[in-house]
Image 1 (tube, helix red, strand yellow):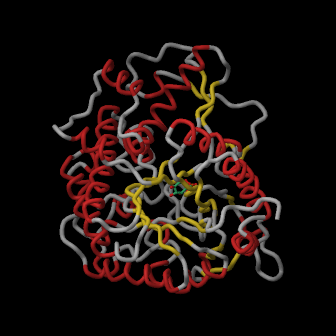
Image 2: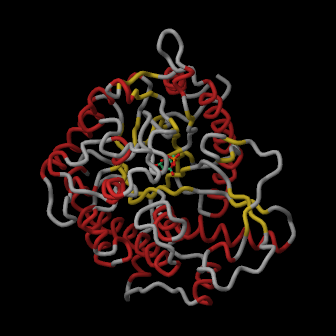
Image 3: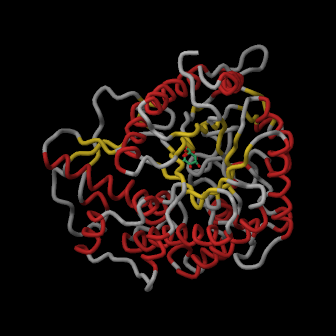
Amino acid sequence: IQFRFPKGFWWGSAVSATQIEGAADKDGKGKNIWDYWYEQEPNRFFNGVGPEKTSQFYDRFREDIQLMKEIGHNSFRFSISWSRMFPDGKSINRKGIDFYNQVIDELILHGIEPFVNLYHFDMPLELQKMGGWANREVVNAYVQYAKTCFAQFGDRVKKWFTHNEPIVPVEGGYLYDFHYPNEVDFGKAVQVAYHMMLSSASAIKEYKELGQDGKIGIILNLTPSYPRSHHPADLQASKIADAFFNRSFLDPSITGEFPQELVQILDEEGYRPEMEDGDLDRIEQNTVDFLGINYYQPRRVKAKEYMPNPDAPFMPECFFDHYVMPGRKMNPYRGWEIYEKGIYDILINLKENYGNIECFISENGMGVEGEERFRDKNGTIQDDYRIEFIQEHLKWVHKAIQEGCNVKGYHLWTFMDNWSWTNAYKNRYGLVSVNLDKDSERSIKKSGYWFKSLSENNGF
Ligand code: BGP
């Protein structure tokens, strides 16, 4: 074993409710924005494959948890579907509670620790009709939902997350048009981001008041921002991109304060969100116990070459441009750069600038199209590229740990192939494949068997 990880390292994977459960209107579940959007525009991103189909985890979770055990998981992150728990956003659905109780019990029975996330992009439709995160009442509804989850499941769940990648619904829904309600409105984006941050701190406050003996954190997608050159204009552009896309949630979640650079820009441009007295104290006093890091790709930034068009809607890109790194390595299917060292840079930054807070890699992974062509005679998908992808990232995680970073685990995106927000089933990420043509039949990929040895050896 060349790269050995600390004792008790968390090995596992992550999923989200909308992407794996299916059963979108079974047992009283209400619609969320994805069920609705797919109904409205089935071919927009989804090639006619919607979240109602997916991988059928709702009906097959026992079989799936058995598979998790087989491929060496000691921990597993899933999200609770808010609209399964509260179909109309307000009143509770007993069958939703029953389902998650069974999943949690089954995981524990198999020696797999449940990591539970409360929000993964899936706003209940009834609450979206009230404005979704733009409406402060939705923050209150979320806190009620969070409290219910802590009360129902907190005796067994000891690792909680308030949000997964909160910047993504902000970007997708209110800036760049890839999440419902697909508006372009910078002011609303700021309000939504602020309310999501407030909802996180508010849920943390409730959790602490209950005095349960677990931890609560947040999961952020961090995209280290690299300037094209050391020219002050490039450095400044990169700093602003970092403030918008990373520090906007990272700083308040860990230090309790929004980054000064960002506040200044919003003030100067007249985009301060609506707040109430006491909000900022609540955010300051309710920071996270630990952090989940989703890492896929870095951000390459340069100074703006042309003045932004004064008539175009205001965007973060008024302050910087992206550029293509010459010689970059790409995942051609997803169109994302692969830069393994980014994961190390994130961890060192947390160590040096954020008190070396306890953290783990909560997502990292490689989506590939057309994996069926790699299936061998015995029916196993030979996904050596995925094994290599994981190893190359883990080497950097290992180095960071050697240098004192407080990293507790690595979760891959994802356990099994599942439905994605912007490309349905096109890109496959799983350690386990799902054959949609054969009643979603599961089979462990080569990477799944490899993951088992990784976990058993606590290294590779
Ligand atoms: C992350 C999300 C996941 C997942 C993953 C892969 O941002 O948290 O839900 O979907 O990205 O991305 P995609 O499915 O868009 O290829």
